[in-house]
Amino acid sequence: MSSTVHTGGRNPAHAEPAVVRWILLGLALGFIFLFLLLPLAAVFVEAFRKGWGGYLAAFAEPEALSAIQLTLITALIAVPCNLVFGVAAAWAIAKFDFPGKSALTTLIDLPFSVSPVVAGLVYVLMFGAHGWFGPWLMAHDIKIIFALPGMVLATTFVTFPFVARELLPLMQSQGTDEEQASIVLGASGWQTFWHVTLPNIRWGLLYGVILCNARAMGEFGAVSVVSGHIRGQTNTVPLHIEILYNEYQSVAAFAVATLLTLLALVTLVVKSLVEWQFERQQQAAQRLSPERPHHN
Image (cartoon, rainbow, N blue to C red):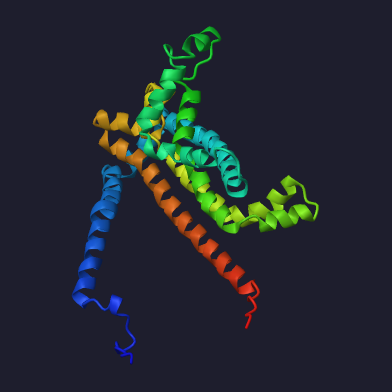
C-alpha cells in the first residue's frame, strides 16, 4: 500500500520560506548593482564631469581618432577571418569523422586558457626583430611586430574560438540528415551549405560574430605586447585609454572608455534579441513538425 503526501499542488523542492527567497534575490541584486551597474555608472559620470565640451574634446584629438580607426580596421580584418575559420571548423567537426578530430576540438579552446599576454609574446618570438623569422622579414622590409599585421594576428588568435564554439553544439544537434538529403537530390556542396546549412545556423552564427567583434574591439593584453604603443600609429582604443589614464587625463580616458562601454551594452541587447529570435524559430519549428505516430 502506497501513501500519498499532499502538498497542495506545490513542488516541495521549491517550497522554501519567503525569507530565503528574498535573501537570495537581495544578494543577486546587490552583486549586480555593486559589480555591474555602479562601475558602468561611474564611467559615464566621470566622462561627463566637465560637461559635453570636455566629453567631445576627448574625441577631437588626432590620437583618439587614430585609435578608433585602427580598432575598427583590426576588427574588420580579424572578425571575417574568424568567421571563415569558425564555420569551417564547426562544419568539419560536426559533420565528418577524421583523425585528430578531438585534438582540433581541444585546440579551438586554447585561447581561452592561454593568457593574451602570452599570445602576444609568442608572436614577438616568431616575428620580432630577434625572433625566428625576424632577420628574413627585415631583409625583405616586411614589418609585422609594432605594426598592423601583428595586431591583427594577435587579435585573431584571442578571438577565434567565439564563432566556432557558438556553432559547434548547434550543428552537432542538427545532425546531417538534411545535408545528406540535399546531396541525394543533386545539390552541390556549396548549394547545400548556402540553402540548407546556413539557414539553420544563421542565428548562432550572428551571435558568434557579435561576441567575436566585441572581444576584438576590446582586446588589450595581446595587442599591447605586439603594438609597441606608438602614438597615432599602433594604439587601439583600449591602449589609448591606458595612456590617457596614466597621464592623469581621467576625463578624456573615461570619455573614450564610454565607447567600449556602449559597445558592451549594445552587444548584450543584440545578444538578447538574437536569442529571442532563435527561440521563436525553434518553437515555430516544433509546432510545424509532425507528431510521431504511437505504436501499440
